[in-house]
Image (cartoon, rainbow, N blue to C red; front, side, top):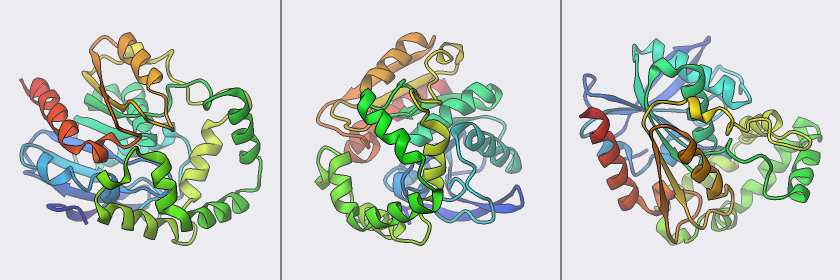
Amino acid sequence: MPPGAEVGFIEVDGGRVRALTAGEPTAPPIVLIHGGGTDNAAISWYRLIEPLGRTHRVIAVDLPGFGGTTGIPPVGGPWEQADLVARTMAAIGVEGAVAVGVSMGGDVALRLALRHPGVVDGLVLIAPCGLVPILRDRFAHGAAWLTTRLPERLLVALGGFTGRFTRSLMRAVVHDIATLPEPVIEEFAREATAPGASLAFVRYNLATIGRGTMLNYAMDEVASITAPTLFLHGEKDPLVPIDGSRRAAALMPDARLVSVPECGHLAHLEAHDRFLSEVIRFLDGIRR
C-alpha cells in the first residue's frame, strides 16, 4: 500500500471500485489512472499519493479487472474506461478534477477530456497511449494484430505465463530498474501471477489494435482539448514513442511536453523527483 493512502470502495455499476485516497476532502481533487498490463493504483502511484495529498484531494482508482475493483467486468477500450471514471467521479460528488494517467491510463485520461470535458480541469499524461497510428512498424503491428485473433482464454493464459518473468519484462520497459522501489516490483510480480490477471489488458488490446492501424488513435481529436495539459515522457521509452506526445502537445492550445532524459516508460517512478517538481508547478499554475 502506498504511504499515506487510505483504502475505500465506491459503488458503481453494481460493483465496487477500489479507490486509494489522501488529502482533505475540501482540497482541489486529482484523479489518478493507472496503466495496463497487471498494473493498479497502488503500483503506479506508490510514490505520489502521499506528497500530492499534502495540497490536494487524491483519488487513485482501480479500473475494472485491475487491483481491488470487483463486481464490474473488464470494459475493454479507453472510451468505456473513461465513462466508468466519469461515473465514479459523479458517485463521490467530484464535479471537476485534474486527471493524471500513465500509458493506458493516459489514453483513458485523454478520452475523459474528449468525452466529458466538463469534469477535467487539467491533464497530466505520462507516456500516453492513443497517439501513435501503428505499433512501432508495420511488421510489429501486424504481428500484434494476429495475436489478438487468438481466443481470449488463450491470450489470458499466455499473459499468466509471461507474468512469471515480471522482473525481466520490467527491465525491458524502464531504462534502469534500480530506480524503481522494490515494493513496486514485488507487487507487479504478485499481480501478474494472480488467476486471470491479464484479462482486462487483453480486452483493452482487443479494442484498440486494428488490422492495419490503432483504433484508439486520437491525434485528429486532441486539438479540441482546451484543459491545461502537461505531457511527461521518457526519452528512452521503448514502448510508446515520444513523438506522439510531442505532436499532441504542439497541436493542443494549452499544453507542453517535458521530455525526461535517461528515462524509460515509467517517468513518474523512474524520475520521481523531476516528475513531482514538474507536476507541482503545473498544479500550482492551475490553482492560480
